[in-house]
Image 1 (spheres, helix red, strand yellow):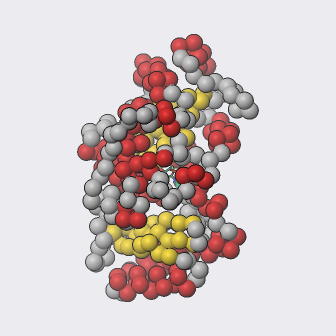
Image 2 (cartoon, helix red, strand yellow):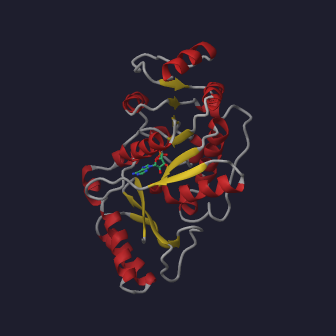
Image 3 (cartoon, protein in one colour):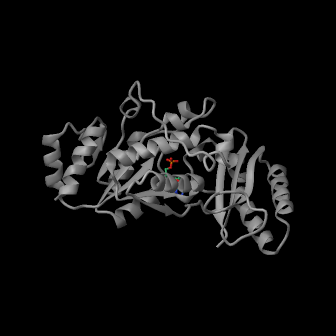
Length: 304
Ligand code: AMP
């Protein structure tokens, strides 16, 4: 069936099947119209579709989302797109660690059906001005420190939902606020997609995997797992009934004393609306963002 599909597509649409050095058994799609053509064929065959949006520089965290999609969907589309709209002026857009060729090889090994890797012009042609923003929930936590970030994320994810009309879409709890925001956007805009949240994949020492971990120096890499450790200590202390404000202050001091250079936030929030909690609740999420030199780490844990 897949072979037939590829042949049909090759005839019907100008799909990039092969590029220099790129493995031949995976379909790489560069244009929105080609994705839509493929989707039409899949829909005719009543196949359900899973979407995994990524910015590339893939690691085991991404692979866990992709494997989940492969297990729950008939067809899986992985997107590789470093979305300029979600980077602030002084952020790392220009040096984001993209490596398309090694990503494509990894995706081929996983037997992903389609890679959608559009250009910036394809996604944001000149004159494209519409944004999706979520005030309030998008202004908290990450939004306070990265003011345009969630507008960039919500806009690109909304566009991908419109382009691929997936039945399921997979997002990591690593970016917990992002997951909540995408769920809310899909609900508010009546987008018929089921959002599947996937657990955080960590290194053995507890550090949450992230494409940006490559920025860490050897020394910073040794200190980095402390963020996860401290989140767990906060949880233990909260369970022991200590005062939240005191627990969080002590945790910040510990991070700063151990090599972290700045704490953007360390908060205990409601796990649905992300408002900071004054008292512990079983529906809490502990979230933190902290800097090690020039690298910003984020992490979070649930309390259940
Ligand atoms: P990114 O490429 O950083 O935009 O991430 C793409 C998707 O992978 C997002 O849904 C992330 O939350 C998810 N992700 C990134 N790192 C991890 C991780 N360590 N564990 C689980 N999911 C992750």
